[in-house]
Amino acid sequence: MSENPTDRSTAPEPAGTPEPAGPEPTDAPAPEDNRTPYERMGGAETFRAIVHRFYQNVRSTPDLHALYPEQDLGPAEDRLRMFLEQYWGGPTTYSEQRGHPRLRMRHAPFQVTPAQRDNWLACMHDAVGSVEMAPAARDELWNYLVRAADAMINAFEGEDMTPPHRRNLL
Image 1 (cartoon, rainbow, N blue to C red):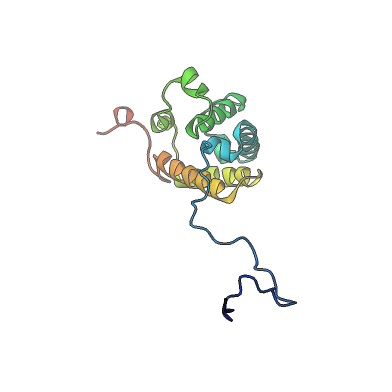
Image 2: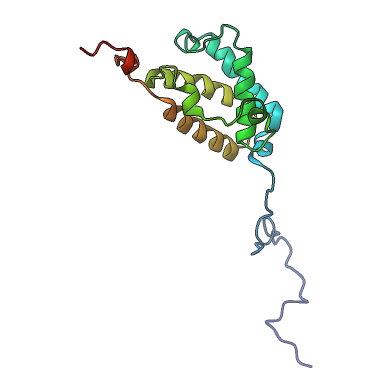
């Protein structure tokens, strides 16, 4: 049997040769993350912390606080927490207690201007930033919040929001 000089399968590695860095590449797909967004974002504890911090911020933002008909923001805090939990795949308590969310309909009685949207987002940005969350989950949550806040705008600065049937049109 002749030796093949190019066959290195049994030859010892030369001294000082570094080991390959990291695992060998594979074509295997990454394991699927079957958790709901609610679970990936941290579940009840995370949403409770975000919403609580948000309403602390609202209390110290007069223009935004003025939008809330209740002086006690506790009920509003509960509603927002339940809504966000349900939206992201958590408990369905919001719908069980309040029915379909219908965000635009529920916000229609209140003048929401671009400036108020910006204040709302500033309060929410601080709140979302106050919790530990994977960057991808944080981006997903934040992108939704921006879109939702944009959709609530129903007035512009200086616009008369008196309903047409109550305006003196003559």
